[in-house]
Length: 419
Image (cartoon, rainbow, N blue to C red; front, top):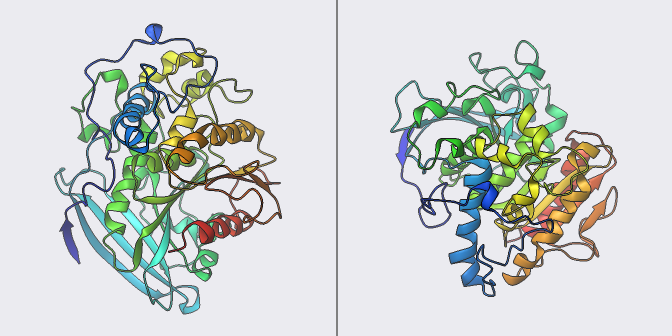
């Protein structure tokens, strides 16, 4: 089945849809701010005191800033041609349905990248189900042991994925069967469908958009491209009759957690955002970091962000925003920051500070935001004295994702996504 469908405009801000200011202050012209920039104060220091002012003035300003100075501006949403290539109702002993969808960018040449989306749904199907959407590192077959999932041998191989796809290599990581048992669906595609994770601008989606607005040094990096790809998957998911489009959640781990946060910040169709162990460039504040610093992440991963961001190496206090402002762009939608207590590199203390610094925006918009300390750990219940719409869950675990994390993630989703 192939169909071309229009986007639902007006429900969310697409990348670049806020317009592009013709000029931004040079880095040396930006004021030094050792304290966190106030998310409720315009760049010219005008206070933001109403939800309307946030929506029409400060939020668009922050989007322009994070695109220009850090992530890069991505293309507007293209037309999508969706082709359902497989439906299989035999997964997990008949308890799950696999639906595979090829997404083509209708206005790009045939040799442009295509998204190979795998959608897992619980059976029997009754009403549409909420969905968690996330990029995978090693290919769709890695997320489950089920042999029905198609292997795409031409997919670029991440250095940590071995020589070829391993079915079920990340089965515990994604716990797809558990999600289905809780009434959730799961959608995923391989990151290289949009852009391989390497410092090369001649592969992936980038060469098919050579004339984006703004200076060359502010062109979109890989994380912005991946986030754009997640929104393209959402373009399809909101049209699928099996999907509850009002309960579409985005999740990602590590660098893909940074991606989930950016996607959730810019695309308001994501009802819940879960950046898992996302660290620097994700949930963790850049200022006063005792873990990975801006200079190090730009040096080791020069393709993740735009080239303008390198000018903030060792000058984080010149940033006209920090990551709490990216979190605030999600408001009033819930954010669950999930962390491992054995993973100090992800900088969970500064991620919690980021949540707390975004809280005034949530309160302005009438959301709970942070309640109590905003922190739940290990076996503590999600719904308790610290339950709010901005929370950190911290498990005594290393840099990974597993069933124990998912149990708490789904408990949080149950609580905040009630109809």
